[in-house]
Image (cartoon, rainbow, N blue to C red; front, side, top):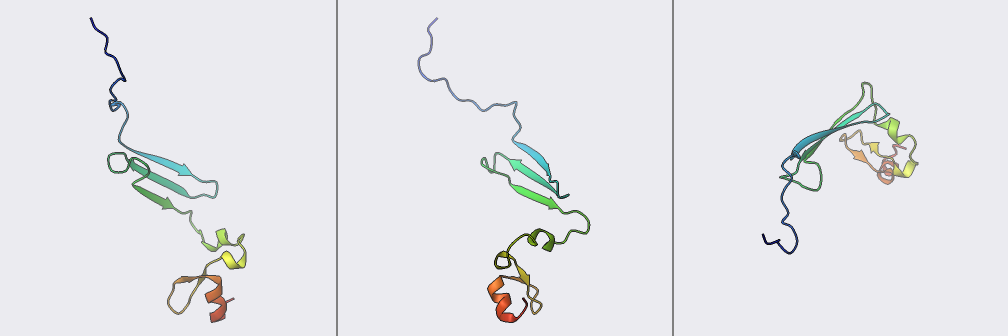
Length: 92
């Protein structure tokens, strides 16, 4: 019986699933579900779903930011704008 010399061949572990999900529950009350498919994307999730708690307002997370880093709602078109543009429009 002869022993094989060299590096052993790499085989894909068949006991590990290629499609799975991970659920992340944040202390703020919102939940993220990460969907992985290692056949499509071996380095990261394929899709992420985010569920916000009831009554969640985006500005609650921004109140700790300085004025220049916040986003402001433009009432003319409903889009979010940066501080400089909001200042030009007189929204701040």
